[in-house]
Length: 136
Image 1 (cartoon, rainbow, N blue to C red):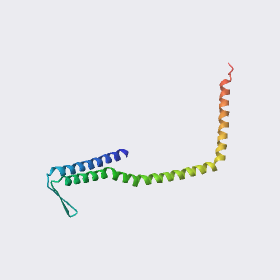
Image 2: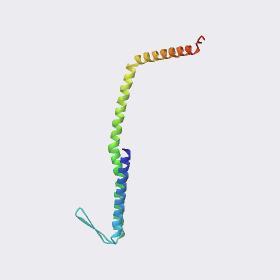
Image 3: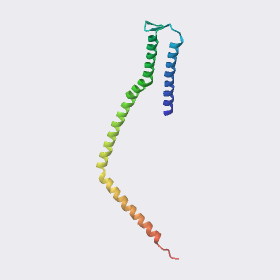
Image 4: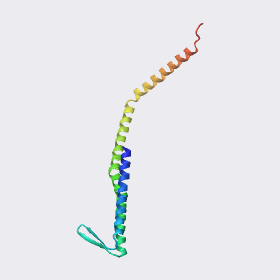
């Protein structure tokens, strides 16, 4: 699944980069007179440097927003709440396990004591059997 997300992210980043390059190419390719219609508003880019500088700056800012701001908003809008919920679940689970350890501590101690006693007894029996000499 990680590979799919990497492929999709790289693909979307390349598409944004190609759109930026296409916008700059359109600005610089059609000569000094360009007619732009945006929301029923007409804009004419003449020979002035200010018009071209403004249009290039606008495309640059739009590209920066698409490349950095949108992924950060998605990251903070989706991943941060998931991390918060995961942290709350981890705290609740730790509290439940802690309460279980406190309530079950007498049984845990009894089991540990039995384990130590039985383990030492089996080791002692094995050591005695190893040192025992069989008659020939």
